[in-house]
Image 1 (cartoon, helix red, strand yellow):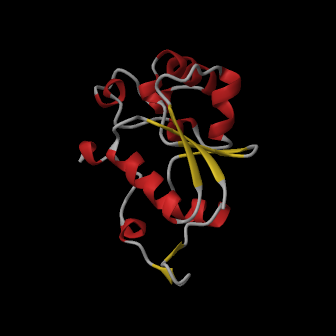
Image 2 (cartoon, rainbow, N blue to C red):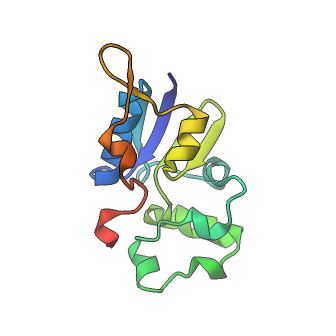
Image 3 (cartoon, helix red, strand yellow):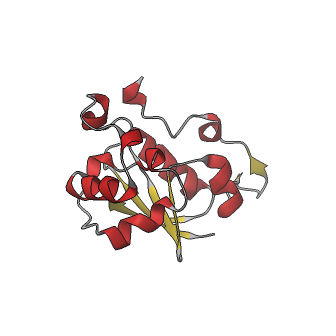
Length: 142
């Protein structure tokens, strides 16, 4: 069991399902609003690790969908400054367990990191329907 700081967009259907899956796996979820958090370069940058800049962005953000911002044309510094000014640009969720930080909800990566096994009342591991769902892609973008 892990205690996860979970930065989300309140009301996001996928963030709600993601948190439910984490809780069903026995984790404690400390949910926080990613849009009202006072981010700085120092607090936000560690979540991106060695991912390419294009993977830092929420592709469903209005400014990206409209073509105003094209992540492939940005360097890391510019991308971070844009995100500090418009948190809707930040890919979610942002997850923190201890000193480790990750972005997005890649279920295989999370399962290997902290575990996503769901057990029934007898302790038997069961497959939860949420595990089979795409919990990364915003349903509103389809």
